[in-house]
Length: 106
Image 1 (cartoon, helix red, strand yellow):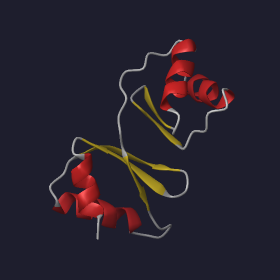
Image 2 (cartoon, helix red, strand yellow):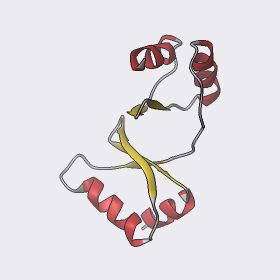
Image 3 (cartoon, one colour):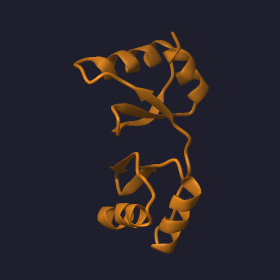
């Protein structure tokens, strides 16, 4: 099913910036949300939810992600999910996205 979902989006010419599969639910990161939704609907998938996320560029070095998560933790913000996307970017889903952005602003 993962191959079918990702293949449908990519086959439609929609760039996938990142994706994660968690317990049978596929999260697709793309800048063309409407087109991705249409393609997935047409392929027979049920879109459960749409979620805005924060993209955080990180260095490709030991401890880079830990430093990001520590700053968020110090702001007492719970992260709902996170994964790595193309271009060394962390994808962070949380109920308080503005809080995440504030925690990461120098």
